[in-house]
Image 1: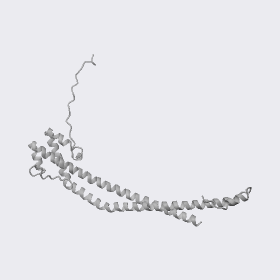
Image 2: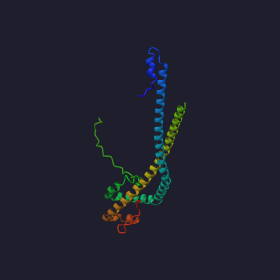
Image 3: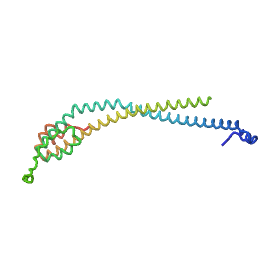
Image 4: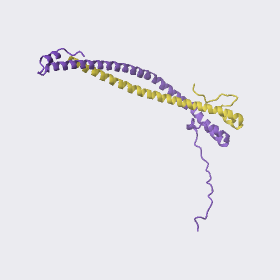
Length: 142
Length: 91
């Protein structure tokens, strides 16, 4: 390290005296060095931060430009579906459910779509299964 | 003294830059969230259409084996001969 020269002669000339001046000069020099280093680090951080700002701003602009058209398209698409196809699918599935109740071989085909078309399936009324007859025992009776 | 002022100004600039990054990030996050919700909604409708179309096709196939399916296919314009299903998936 390039330490200031003034500190060495001062220490050599007066070995018994405290070298306040030399120490102060050395500390001032170190302080300046540290401050310069700090400013360089800050400058680097500012450049990095500015680059991140520019990147994020461009990304944000890109998304916000696409958003209104995407929103309009989705609303139009959903309205068109609900107006035209939703009712048709509901009626179609309902009719197929009625059909499957009388034609058991169609039920497996319909069951394949129970997950993907779950909102369109009508709740199936479970037929009451008769409880198995419990054989009467005379164990409790005397 | 001048050096300290420069440092203070640089710290201030860095702070403002960080604040700007946070503000832009928050806006970007919420915009992306809305965009994903819109895309999810479109995908959900598409999946329903594709599933309905597939069910219609299987019903047509089944109708070839079981003529009792015919009235339903006719009602929904899904007769195998015409082959013009009314439920079309999105392109």
